[in-house]
Length: 234
Image 1 (cartoon, rainbow, N blue to C red):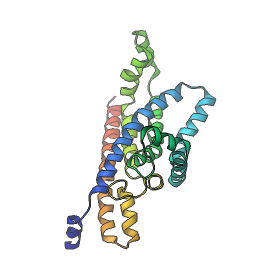
Image 2 (image 1 turned 60 degrees about the vertical axis):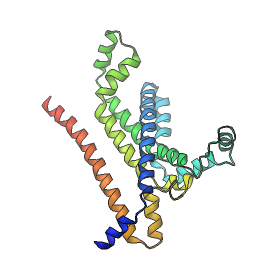
Image 3 (image 1 turned 90 degrees about the horizontal axis):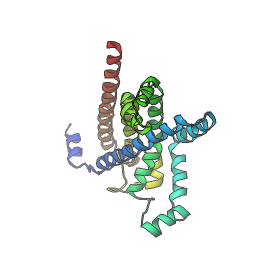
Image 4 (image 1 turned 90 degrees about the vertical axis):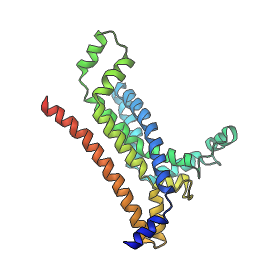
């Protein structure tokens, strides 16, 4: 117990703050991009839908290191896009916190997209028809009828997206590196201290991430549980 207290007293909390900041920003980006993509794909034809769905879901089935490899090729300062961003906007993606956000967003995006799409598919079309008979535009119907009706699914997707972005390791390590106080997340910190043989510090970080994961699961169950209760009452 005394050893744990000593570790906590000397613990550098920057990995936690970096992970939380990265997870929050990536979740916000994924939320709007996921909803936008889900809406567009649902309106597309069967062939376009199949191709788009495969592309948008691909990061979920690829190993994170593979996704990180492609991101590294795309944003490296030796590549056209990386050169353009740095020379014109002084934006450096590789070995930066921006790289953390991009990697976490790419890896977590499919969860938001898939959950949003599934939730939208469950919306009763009669509600949409009713909105049209009231003279509402498609955009108004989407944000005032479809999204609120699909709310529990969208919220669950948002929570899962945050959890995935928070724990991202493979793609982040390849694109953003492991720079203490800048890009070193909790997952990277755990891997680093284990390599150094410091299992006690690794255990403390594991407990911290377990607590965060439990809170995330609790919130998700709270949302979906409340929805199921309403269905039963109905």
